[in-house]
Image (cartoon, rainbow, N blue to C red; front, side):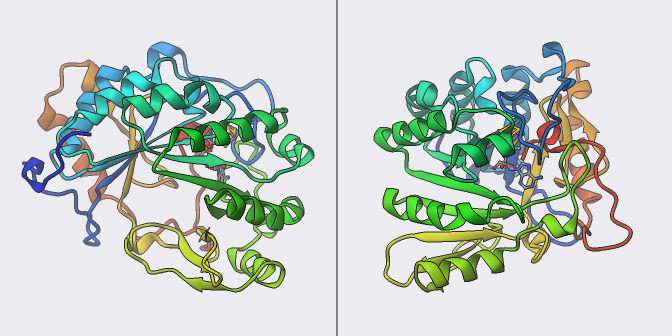
Length: 340
Ligand code: SAM
Ligand code: SF4
Protein backbone atom coordinates (compact mmCIF):
# COMPACT_ATOMS: atom_id res chain seq x y z
CA UNK A 1 0.00 0.00 0.00
CA UNK A 2 1.25 3.52 -0.81
CA UNK A 3 2.70 5.57 2.03
CA UNK A 4 -0.12 7.05 4.09
CA UNK A 5 0.22 10.51 5.44
CA UNK A 6 -1.52 13.86 5.46
CA UNK A 7 1.32 15.15 3.31
CA UNK A 8 -0.58 13.72 0.33
CA UNK A 9 -3.50 15.96 1.15
CA UNK A 10 -2.43 18.65 -1.27
CA UNK A 11 -5.96 19.98 -1.81
CA UNK A 12 -8.57 21.03 0.75
CA UNK A 13 -10.66 18.18 2.20
CA UNK A 14 -14.07 17.31 0.76
CA UNK A 15 -16.42 18.94 3.24
CA UNK A 16 -20.17 19.26 2.64
CA UNK A 17 -22.51 21.99 3.83
CA UNK A 18 -23.15 20.07 7.08
CA UNK A 19 -19.44 19.84 7.94
CA UNK A 20 -19.10 16.15 7.03
CA UNK A 21 -15.64 15.32 5.69
CA UNK A 22 -15.58 12.71 2.90
CA UNK A 23 -12.67 10.28 2.93
CA UNK A 24 -14.32 7.02 1.92
CA UNK A 25 -14.97 6.15 -1.74
CA UNK A 26 -17.02 3.22 -3.02
CA UNK A 27 -16.11 2.22 -6.53
CA UNK A 28 -18.47 0.12 -8.59
CA UNK A 29 -16.42 -1.79 -11.15
CA UNK A 30 -19.32 -3.44 -13.00
CA UNK A 31 -23.11 -3.67 -12.98
CA UNK A 32 -22.94 -7.34 -14.02
CA UNK A 33 -23.49 -10.19 -11.61
CA UNK A 34 -23.52 -13.97 -11.61
CA UNK A 35 -26.69 -14.19 -9.47
CA UNK A 36 -29.94 -12.21 -9.25
CA UNK A 37 -30.76 -11.27 -5.64
CA UNK A 38 -34.34 -10.00 -5.53
CA UNK A 39 -33.40 -7.05 -3.30
CA UNK A 40 -30.98 -5.75 -5.92
CA UNK A 41 -31.58 -6.96 -9.48
CA UNK A 42 -34.41 -8.02 -11.76
CA UNK A 43 -34.75 -11.79 -12.15
CA UNK A 44 -34.24 -11.77 -15.92
CA UNK A 45 -33.68 -9.57 -18.98
CA UNK A 46 -31.28 -7.33 -17.13
CA UNK A 47 -30.03 -4.44 -19.26
CA UNK A 48 -26.31 -4.29 -18.54
CA UNK A 49 -24.03 -1.46 -19.57
CA UNK A 50 -22.01 -2.06 -22.76
CA UNK A 51 -18.38 -2.66 -21.80
CA UNK A 52 -17.21 0.50 -23.57
CA UNK A 53 -19.25 2.52 -21.08
CA UNK A 54 -17.41 1.16 -18.04
CA UNK A 55 -14.59 3.30 -16.70
CA UNK A 56 -11.26 1.73 -17.63
CA UNK A 57 -8.75 0.94 -14.88
CA UNK A 58 -6.67 3.92 -16.08
CA UNK A 59 -9.68 6.26 -15.81
CA UNK A 60 -10.52 4.94 -12.36
CA UNK A 61 -6.93 5.28 -11.19
CA UNK A 62 -6.77 8.87 -12.41
CA UNK A 63 -10.04 9.73 -10.69
CA UNK A 64 -8.88 8.14 -7.43
CA UNK A 65 -5.56 10.04 -7.57
CA UNK A 66 -7.52 13.31 -7.75
CA UNK A 67 -9.83 12.54 -4.82
CA UNK A 68 -6.91 11.09 -2.82
CA UNK A 69 -5.23 14.51 -3.04
CA UNK A 70 -8.40 15.86 -1.37
CA UNK A 71 -8.23 13.41 1.52
CA UNK A 72 -9.94 10.23 0.30
CA UNK A 73 -7.94 7.43 1.92
CA UNK A 74 -10.30 4.41 2.01
CA UNK A 75 -11.63 2.56 -1.01
CA UNK A 76 -14.15 -0.22 -1.38
CA UNK A 77 -14.63 -2.08 -4.66
CA UNK A 78 -18.16 -3.25 -5.30
CA UNK A 79 -20.74 -3.66 -8.05
CA UNK A 80 -22.68 -5.66 -9.37
CA UNK A 81 -20.33 -8.48 -8.55
CA UNK A 82 -16.80 -7.05 -8.65
CA UNK A 83 -15.18 -10.44 -9.22
CA UNK A 84 -16.84 -10.77 -12.65
CA UNK A 85 -14.76 -7.78 -13.88
CA UNK A 86 -11.71 -9.20 -15.67
CA UNK A 87 -8.30 -8.69 -14.11
CA UNK A 88 -9.63 -6.99 -11.00
CA UNK A 89 -6.41 -7.69 -9.15
CA UNK A 90 -4.61 -5.41 -11.64
CA UNK A 91 -6.88 -2.56 -10.61
CA UNK A 92 -6.20 -3.33 -6.94
CA UNK A 93 -2.47 -3.16 -7.64
CA UNK A 94 -2.83 0.21 -9.40
CA UNK A 95 -5.01 1.70 -6.65
CA UNK A 96 -2.70 0.45 -3.91
CA UNK A 97 0.12 2.55 -5.38
CA UNK A 98 -1.78 5.85 -5.20
CA UNK A 99 -0.33 8.23 -2.61
CA UNK A 100 -2.63 8.60 0.38
CA UNK A 101 -4.67 5.42 -0.13
CA UNK A 102 -4.45 3.57 3.18
CA UNK A 103 -7.06 0.89 2.82
CA UNK A 104 -8.65 -1.09 -0.03
CA UNK A 105 -11.54 -3.44 0.63
CA UNK A 106 -13.90 -5.48 -1.53
CA UNK A 107 -17.53 -6.52 -1.19
CA UNK A 108 -18.33 -9.77 -2.98
CA UNK A 109 -21.02 -12.43 -3.14
CA UNK A 110 -18.18 -14.93 -2.74
CA UNK A 111 -19.08 -17.20 -5.66
CA UNK A 112 -15.73 -16.64 -7.41
CA UNK A 113 -13.71 -15.96 -4.30
CA UNK A 114 -11.97 -19.32 -4.15
CA UNK A 115 -10.55 -18.57 -7.64
CA UNK A 116 -9.49 -14.98 -7.02
CA UNK A 117 -8.56 -14.74 -3.32
CA UNK A 118 -4.87 -15.37 -3.99
CA UNK A 119 -4.25 -12.78 -6.79
CA UNK A 120 -6.32 -10.18 -4.94
CA UNK A 121 -4.39 -10.74 -1.74
CA UNK A 122 -1.08 -10.57 -3.57
CA UNK A 123 -2.14 -7.31 -5.26
CA UNK A 124 -2.69 -5.61 -1.90
CA UNK A 125 -6.32 -6.31 -0.96
CA UNK A 126 -6.46 -7.29 2.69
CA UNK A 127 -10.07 -6.71 3.75
CA UNK A 128 -13.13 -8.49 2.45
CA UNK A 129 -16.86 -8.39 3.02
CA UNK A 130 -18.62 -11.52 1.85
CA UNK A 131 -22.38 -11.40 1.48
CA UNK A 132 -24.04 -14.37 3.13
CA UNK A 133 -27.72 -14.04 4.05
CA UNK A 134 -28.14 -17.58 5.34
CA UNK A 135 -26.69 -21.06 5.48
CA UNK A 136 -29.39 -23.02 3.71
CA UNK A 137 -29.28 -23.58 -0.04
CA UNK A 138 -33.08 -23.12 -0.14
CA UNK A 139 -32.80 -19.59 1.27
CA UNK A 140 -29.84 -18.86 -0.99
CA UNK A 141 -31.94 -19.82 -4.01
CA UNK A 142 -35.01 -17.96 -2.82
CA UNK A 143 -32.99 -14.77 -2.51
CA UNK A 144 -30.49 -15.07 -5.37
CA UNK A 145 -32.70 -17.03 -7.78
CA UNK A 146 -29.61 -19.09 -8.59
CA UNK A 147 -27.73 -21.91 -6.85
CA UNK A 148 -24.23 -21.86 -5.38
CA UNK A 149 -24.10 -21.55 -1.59
CA UNK A 150 -21.41 -24.27 -1.52
CA UNK A 151 -19.17 -22.09 -3.70
CA UNK A 152 -19.63 -19.10 -1.40
CA UNK A 153 -18.70 -21.21 1.63
CA UNK A 154 -15.64 -22.57 -0.22
CA UNK A 155 -14.67 -18.98 -1.06
CA UNK A 156 -14.90 -17.97 2.59
CA UNK A 157 -12.70 -20.90 3.62
CA UNK A 158 -10.15 -20.02 0.96
CA UNK A 159 -10.03 -16.39 2.13
CA UNK A 160 -9.55 -17.51 5.75
CA UNK A 161 -6.73 -19.81 4.64
CA UNK A 162 -5.06 -16.92 2.76
CA UNK A 163 -4.86 -14.86 5.94
CA UNK A 164 -6.89 -11.80 4.93
CA UNK A 165 -6.60 -9.19 7.70
CA UNK A 166 -10.34 -8.96 8.13
CA UNK A 167 -13.19 -10.94 6.60
CA UNK A 168 -16.67 -9.81 7.43
CA UNK A 169 -19.95 -11.49 6.61
CA UNK A 170 -22.83 -9.24 5.49
CA UNK A 171 -26.38 -10.54 5.83
CA UNK A 172 -29.37 -8.64 4.47
CA UNK A 173 -32.35 -9.29 6.73
CA UNK A 174 -35.80 -9.68 5.22
CA UNK A 175 -38.90 -10.25 7.32
CA UNK A 176 -40.61 -13.51 6.46
CA UNK A 177 -37.51 -14.98 4.80
CA UNK A 178 -34.33 -14.76 6.82
CA UNK A 179 -35.51 -15.26 10.43
CA UNK A 180 -34.57 -18.99 10.46
CA UNK A 181 -31.08 -18.11 9.19
CA UNK A 182 -30.10 -15.70 11.94
CA UNK A 183 -29.05 -18.06 14.72
CA UNK A 184 -27.21 -20.53 12.44
CA UNK A 185 -25.37 -17.60 10.82
CA UNK A 186 -24.38 -16.13 14.18
CA UNK A 187 -23.10 -19.55 15.33
CA UNK A 188 -21.25 -20.04 12.04
CA UNK A 189 -19.54 -16.63 12.32
CA UNK A 190 -18.55 -17.32 15.92
CA UNK A 191 -17.10 -20.70 15.02
CA UNK A 192 -15.11 -19.23 12.10
CA UNK A 193 -14.08 -16.18 14.15
CA UNK A 194 -15.57 -13.82 11.56
CA UNK A 195 -17.43 -10.62 12.24
CA UNK A 196 -21.06 -10.72 11.10
CA UNK A 197 -23.16 -7.71 10.16
CA UNK A 198 -26.88 -7.65 9.59
CA UNK A 199 -28.12 -5.03 7.12
CA UNK A 200 -31.70 -3.82 6.96
CA UNK A 201 -33.40 -4.23 3.59
CA UNK A 202 -33.35 -0.86 1.77
CA UNK A 203 -35.64 0.40 -1.01
CA UNK A 204 -33.13 -0.22 -3.80
CA UNK A 205 -34.54 -3.40 -5.33
CA UNK A 206 -34.87 -3.28 -9.12
CA UNK A 207 -38.46 -4.53 -8.99
CA UNK A 208 -39.41 -1.56 -6.80
CA UNK A 209 -41.51 -3.80 -4.58
CA UNK A 210 -39.78 -2.90 -1.28
CA UNK A 211 -42.24 -2.34 1.56
CA UNK A 212 -41.43 -1.24 5.09
CA UNK A 213 -43.01 -4.39 6.56
CA UNK A 214 -40.26 -6.45 4.86
CA UNK A 215 -37.63 -4.74 7.00
CA UNK A 216 -36.45 -7.02 9.78
CA UNK A 217 -34.94 -4.54 12.20
CA UNK A 218 -31.53 -4.87 13.76
CA UNK A 219 -33.17 -4.54 17.16
CA UNK A 220 -35.33 -7.65 16.57
CA UNK A 221 -32.34 -9.64 15.37
CA UNK A 222 -30.29 -8.60 18.37
CA UNK A 223 -33.06 -9.77 20.69
CA UNK A 224 -33.20 -13.14 18.89
CA UNK A 225 -29.44 -13.63 19.19
CA UNK A 226 -29.36 -12.64 22.84
CA UNK A 227 -32.14 -15.02 23.74
CA UNK A 228 -30.68 -17.99 21.79
CA UNK A 229 -26.92 -17.55 22.09
CA UNK A 230 -25.94 -15.08 24.77
CA UNK A 231 -25.86 -11.45 25.76
CA UNK A 232 -24.24 -8.78 23.62
CA UNK A 233 -22.38 -5.78 24.96
CA UNK A 234 -21.73 -2.59 22.95
CA UNK A 235 -18.26 -2.59 21.40
CA UNK A 236 -16.07 0.49 21.66
CA UNK A 237 -16.92 2.82 18.76
CA UNK A 238 -13.51 3.76 17.37
CA UNK A 239 -14.71 5.18 14.04
CA UNK A 240 -17.95 7.08 14.34
CA UNK A 241 -18.41 7.27 10.56
CA UNK A 242 -18.75 3.51 10.28
CA UNK A 243 -22.44 2.69 9.79
CA UNK A 244 -22.57 -0.39 11.96
CA UNK A 245 -23.46 -0.51 15.65
CA UNK A 246 -21.22 -3.31 16.89
CA UNK A 247 -21.68 -5.62 19.86
CA UNK A 248 -19.42 -8.25 21.37
CA UNK A 249 -20.67 -11.47 22.87
CA UNK A 250 -20.28 -11.16 26.63
CA UNK A 251 -18.29 -14.42 26.62
CA UNK A 252 -15.70 -12.69 24.41
CA UNK A 253 -16.30 -15.03 21.50
CA UNK A 254 -17.45 -13.02 18.49
CA UNK A 255 -18.77 -9.67 17.29
CA UNK A 256 -22.09 -8.86 15.66
CA UNK A 257 -22.85 -5.55 13.94
CA UNK A 258 -26.13 -3.99 12.89
CA UNK A 259 -26.43 -1.62 9.95
CA UNK A 260 -29.85 -0.10 10.44
CA UNK A 261 -30.36 2.50 7.69
CA UNK A 262 -34.14 2.27 8.03
CA UNK A 263 -34.72 2.02 11.79
CA UNK A 264 -31.69 4.08 12.89
CA UNK A 265 -30.33 6.25 10.03
CA UNK A 266 -26.67 7.17 10.45
CA UNK A 267 -26.47 9.96 7.84
CA UNK A 268 -25.15 12.58 10.26
CA UNK A 269 -21.74 10.85 10.38
CA UNK A 270 -21.59 9.85 6.70
CA UNK A 271 -18.15 10.18 5.06
CA UNK A 272 -18.95 8.24 1.85
CA UNK A 273 -18.95 9.11 -1.80
CA UNK A 274 -19.50 6.81 -4.75
CA UNK A 275 -18.69 6.32 -8.38
CA UNK A 276 -20.80 4.03 -10.54
CA UNK A 277 -19.36 1.60 -13.06
CA UNK A 278 -20.06 4.03 -15.93
CA UNK A 279 -18.38 6.90 -14.11
CA UNK A 280 -21.30 8.76 -12.55
CA UNK A 281 -20.36 10.39 -9.26
CA UNK A 282 -22.93 10.17 -6.42
CA UNK A 283 -22.91 11.88 -3.06
CA UNK A 284 -25.27 9.30 -1.49
CA UNK A 285 -26.59 5.78 -2.08
CA UNK A 286 -30.04 7.36 -2.32
CA UNK A 287 -29.00 10.35 -4.40
CA UNK A 288 -31.35 11.21 -7.28
CA UNK A 289 -28.67 13.27 -9.07
CA UNK A 290 -25.36 12.16 -10.56
CA UNK A 291 -22.33 14.00 -11.90
CA UNK A 292 -20.86 12.67 -15.17
CA UNK A 293 -17.19 12.08 -14.45
CA UNK A 294 -16.67 9.85 -17.48
CA UNK A 295 -17.47 12.75 -19.78
CA UNK A 296 -14.83 14.85 -18.03
CA UNK A 297 -12.32 11.99 -18.09
CA UNK A 298 -12.91 11.15 -21.77
CA UNK A 299 -13.20 14.68 -23.13
CA UNK A 300 -9.87 16.02 -22.00
CA UNK A 301 -10.94 17.43 -18.63
CA UNK A 302 -8.21 18.49 -16.24
CA UNK A 303 -7.72 17.26 -12.68
CA UNK A 304 -9.19 20.59 -11.58
CA UNK A 305 -12.34 19.84 -13.64
CA UNK A 306 -12.67 16.44 -11.94
CA UNK A 307 -12.21 18.00 -8.51
CA UNK A 308 -14.71 20.79 -9.28
CA UNK A 309 -17.42 18.25 -10.24
CA UNK A 310 -16.76 16.24 -7.06
CA UNK A 311 -16.94 19.38 -4.90
CA UNK A 312 -20.12 20.54 -6.65
CA UNK A 313 -21.76 17.19 -5.89
CA UNK A 314 -20.60 17.06 -2.29
CA UNK A 315 -21.78 20.65 -1.82
CA UNK A 316 -25.28 19.49 -2.76
CA UNK A 317 -25.35 16.45 -0.47
CA UNK A 318 -28.53 16.31 1.61
CA UNK A 319 -28.56 16.00 5.38
CA UNK A 320 -30.23 12.59 5.28
CA UNK A 321 -31.71 10.01 2.89
CA UNK A 322 -35.21 10.75 4.18
CA UNK A 323 -36.61 7.24 3.63
CA UNK A 324 -38.97 7.77 6.55
CA UNK A 325 -40.35 11.00 5.06
CA UNK A 326 -43.44 11.27 2.81
CA UNK A 327 -41.31 13.31 0.41
CA UNK A 328 -38.83 10.41 -0.12
CA UNK A 329 -38.16 9.69 -3.80
CA UNK A 330 -36.35 6.47 -4.67
CA UNK A 331 -33.35 6.74 -6.97
CA UNK A 332 -34.17 5.58 -10.50
CA UNK A 333 -31.24 3.16 -10.34
CA UNK A 334 -31.34 -0.08 -8.39
CA UNK A 335 -28.58 -1.31 -6.09
CA UNK A 336 -26.65 -3.24 -8.79
CA UNK A 337 -26.48 -0.08 -10.95
CA UNK A 338 -25.21 2.09 -8.11
CA UNK A 339 -22.85 -0.17 -6.17
CA UNK A 340 -23.67 -1.20 -2.63
N1 SAM B 1 -22.24 -8.40 -5.46
C1 SAM B 1 -21.57 -8.05 -4.27
C2 SAM B 1 -22.26 -8.60 -3.05
O1 SAM B 1 -23.41 -9.00 -3.17
O2 SAM B 1 -21.64 -8.63 -2.00
C3 SAM B 1 -21.34 -6.56 -4.10
C4 SAM B 1 -22.45 -5.65 -4.50
S1 SAM B 1 -23.88 -5.76 -3.48
C5 SAM B 1 -24.92 -4.58 -4.25
C6 SAM B 1 -23.29 -5.02 -1.97
C7 SAM B 1 -24.08 -5.32 -0.74
O3 SAM B 1 -25.35 -4.72 -0.83
C8 SAM B 1 -24.32 -6.80 -0.49
O4 SAM B 1 -23.95 -7.13 0.83
C9 SAM B 1 -25.80 -6.95 -0.69
O5 SAM B 1 -26.32 -7.99 0.08
C10 SAM B 1 -26.30 -5.60 -0.26
N2 SAM B 1 -27.60 -5.23 -0.79
C11 SAM B 1 -28.03 -5.33 -2.07
N3 SAM B 1 -29.29 -4.86 -2.19
C12 SAM B 1 -29.66 -4.44 -0.97
C13 SAM B 1 -30.85 -3.84 -0.44
N4 SAM B 1 -31.91 -3.56 -1.23
N5 SAM B 1 -30.88 -3.53 0.87
C14 SAM B 1 -29.81 -3.79 1.68
N6 SAM B 1 -28.66 -4.33 1.24
C15 SAM B 1 -28.60 -4.66 -0.07
FE1 SF4 C 1 -25.37 -9.54 -7.38
FE2 SF4 C 1 -24.57 -8.48 -5.07
FE3 SF4 C 1 -26.80 -7.60 -6.28
FE4 SF4 C 1 -26.79 -10.03 -5.23
S1 SF4 C 1 -26.55 -8.10 -4.12
S2 SF4 C 1 -27.57 -9.48 -7.27
S3 SF4 C 1 -24.74 -10.66 -5.55
S4 SF4 C 1 -24.77 -7.41 -7.04
